[in-house]
Length: 369
Image (cartoon, rainbow, N blue to C red; front, side):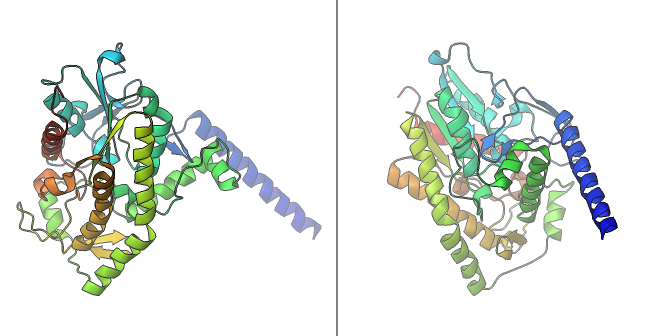
């Protein structure tokens, strides 16, 4: 018995030393960039990413340089005379950040180019971050954007909130009573485990970037799949009952937070390639494709119906609270020539989104008004 206890103590001590060593190594040279830790966001201030995608993808550059400014966003640094500038910030997930594009090729940069002739004092920054949902938008807005005092904040929201079952709000306290939250916030190992968990869930739901040497061929090779009407109704009911009410609360909270500080919110619905449509480039049925949902396997038509339920929340909030809405989900064509996977836009798609958003801005906020 004594020998067993000695051996057990030796094993425990060895594990503790290994964990401590790993923690020290990660603190000295962390190879993983973690932007969200519990209820706090760490901005990648001044970072420069030089990227060469492993797969040569049509509509994408072979070499990409992605820069973050001194605020941690994409775009011009904070102006020397901010009171003389009209300041807009665009917030969203990967479809806003446009990580795999040169700075001038993102749709947010395109909006700035299209708007600058009639708004010469305009200052725009892209505060999109890969993987962010409305939870991240709330924290980013509260902790960083409000203090900048922009006139408008544009939010493209939807795809990263689908089936999201995290708490309805972020705890404003610096510390949490729960040991799990403390580990995620205070230890590098906890951060790494949380990052791996998030990445695994994103991959399961098809939210990661998918690069294809021939997107048309990849579409043709996609598994054909169709749910029965009853199964489709059950999937939609799960989202409407289990996730949509909390999502509505978060959007209401976001709008209230921004307006309470004299900033005008603008909501942008989330488009996607999947849905009940025929791809004009390939003739492929985009609704009869296999996808993953929190409920299990779904077809493209059902996945779009679910995403539209989240988009409908933005439309409803905009209508009921008098918030400006850009309905990109309805205005962007379902055309594989605009996408490099099911949700991310290629270079042609970036330019198309920029034109749609800029035209909507002209209608909603005519220059000189």
